[in-house]
Length: 125
Image 1 (spheres, rainbow, N blue to C red):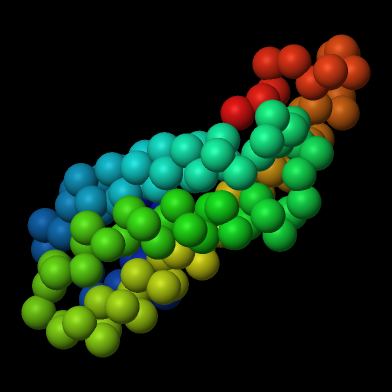
Image 2: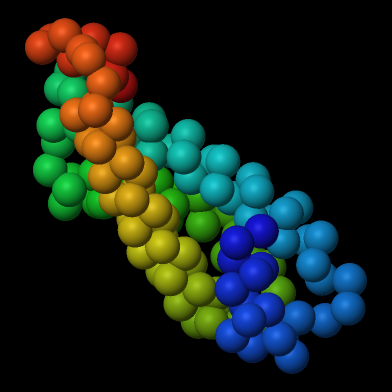
């Protein structure tokens, strides 16, 4: 929904009548499956380490890769051609990495504000 709001503010003429609800149908599953893919990739590459202790670059890379994997399912949509769809997929993958970094910063802030054990239990992937 946030993507639709941003597009409506920046370029309102690009949204046709009736397209509004489609943002939820398209971007909802895209975000969910990107998160699932990120979790899977982070659990494989984490080696049991605490997510808040990982480097921002590694977490962003997992977010970009997870989003890029999900974008493969969306490459054939629309009539703009493959090159345009690849540019859009790359853009969404970068946005996925940025969203992942924001969530990491929120998790680190929350982790520092709450009492916890030194073993980082409950915060592992």
